[in-house]
Amino acid sequence: MDNILGLLKLRIKRGIDLAIRDANSSDPYVVVHMGDQKLKTRVVKNNCNPEWNEELTLSIRDIKTPIRLTVFDKDTFSIDDKMGDADVDLKPYAQAVQMKLTTLPDGCAIKRVQANRTNCLAEESSCIWKNGKIIQEMILRLRNVESGELVVEIEWVDIPGSTGLLGGKS
Image (cartoon, rainbow, N blue to C red; front, side):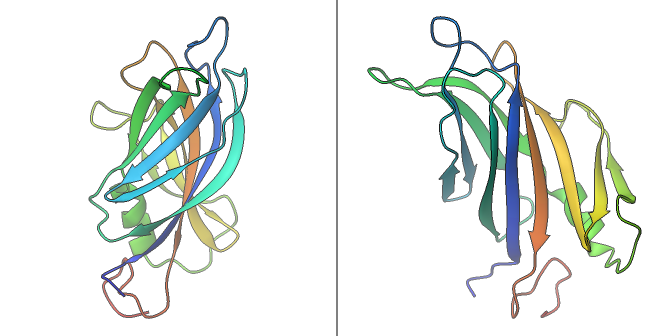
């Protein structure tokens, strides 16, 4: 299966206090890059606090490959303006999934990830048990821009026949 470990559902929920790139607002959308994969959300018109609530799915071959999120302002007559970027580090989340937990109370925090200089987290993020799955919601502080954060959530999906995060066939 082309060495795919599994799939990652990446939910791009919303933007907070994104930069103004037009007269008094922006028309933001998010482009997701991971290795050779490229996905993007729809454009939200005239909104620096957009609600996308879109779910994008990435094929994961290596958890060390960062997921780069770049926010752009859609322009009609000129090149779209960059509004900052952030990376999602999958490694802490992968460690939580590798614990192979089975039944926990809904909302139970399995692992806490501190915000630090090496990640883009705006504040502490938790890997939590929700409806039988481990998810991680995070607020990412955008880099290379005067302001803005993205709220995203990730969820691992095993593929039958793939090696998965645990290294054995599922």
